[in-house]
Amino acid sequence: MTRQELINQIKEKRSFLCVGLDTDITKIPEHLQEEEDPIFAFNKAIIEATEDLCVAYKPNIAFYESYGVRGWHALQKTWQILPKHCFSIADAKRGDIGNTSKMYAQAFFDRTVSGMSFDSITIAPYMGKDSVTPFLDFEGKWAIVLALTSNEGSKDFQNFTNHEGKQLFEEVIDKVNQWGDTENLMYVVGATRGEAFLEIRKHAPDHFLLVPGVGAQGGSLQEVCKYGMNKDCGLLVNSTRGIIYASSGKDFAERAREEAILLRNEMERELIHHGII
Ligand SMILES: O=c1ccn([C@@H]2O[C@H](COP(=O)(O)O)[C@@H](O)[C@H]2O)c(=O)[nH]1
Image (cartoon, rainbow, N blue to C red; front, side, top):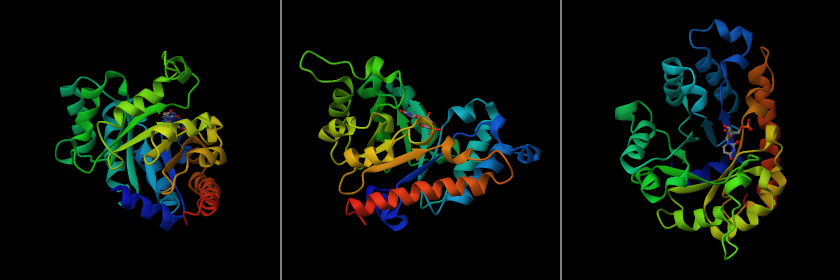
């Protein structure tokens, strides 16, 4: 999906919601445990209940890898049913020496080899240029690079300040900007970092940002929009547990939809407020 197609989807759906698919078999409702593939059955129901409300889906790969072949198979099947009108994100946080990164890119981008072709993958940039550029070599695909993450531990490294007063996350963005552009690069910025979006936007005014941390982690959608929204919206705001585990009963899909509607409505208000729709 191109940047313009993503913007069009946001305007059409009046939403910049990304639904996380972190499917934990121990949290899947009882009645689905009887299914041949409970993870896939759960994902299918969540996708069907939310696809008109969101513009992206983000399976976190850990939740599939942890179940071995069974999990990987569920991921492939899930990728196959992701709606074409939604941006797909493999949240894998990969990055290694060049030839290894190329294999990671193949695993998530090259359908002819791996059976999956996500629009994008999340990348940990710590190993530098040769670990990131193999993902950017794939035409039409996106690298979503960790900049300022939502977790408490993000402060351990990401706020490290050099002798010129520049923080590590700012350096990451300035450097990575040289390797790609707004058509193939996004950054991860946690919703829990509120005002830091002001700083982020000085370094990446036009890039899309993937923003996890609303819902279960307590980040504020209003703050994210106040400081982080740009003229094209420029935000994909993710919620996972707050949506997919809204209920552990037979009504899980309906409850997921209700939670997605609440967020979508809030997003619509922000898009109107910022003059985007
Ligand atoms: O900084 C980051 C980067 C990634 N994540 C991932 O996003 C989702 C958040 O799930 P919630 O249930 O909405 O908290 C999850 O897959 C994380 O691994 C993040 O939270 N923060």
